[in-house]
Image (spheres, rainbow, N blue to C red):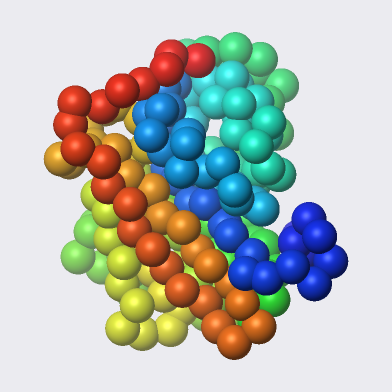
Length: 185
């Protein structure tokens, strides 16, 4: 999938990266995504209403997580059936690959496996662990935005913003203090 800013020639392009909402989206994460040109959800969405809410802000690219299954999904199952295991977004300066990560081995080897699966990407975003991680020491970068909902947030809900300019990419992590303030969808 190719992607360009809403306004031709507008930079920086802002991509919000979230994961592991499990049916709720922290209100502070929601506000953080206000000026995003694109939102990426790396799985364990939990409800069609989460996607609808995100789509009211910007176009959304989302993948299925291990908990995005009929018995755990709240809402329209057509939305669930449309989710894929992986997605690629062509951005100025490179490709962003998105996957949930649960099929890429144990944590100790997950980043190496993700890099091996997506060698042509500039950045691989994954979820599953609920832990905010930015591994930018090798190419492709491998990042996990942590949990943007209320479950297992590891110290507070979190998300990443990717700023894309003609000169490069810059990641900015955002972690919010507990207690999380969430809106159920």
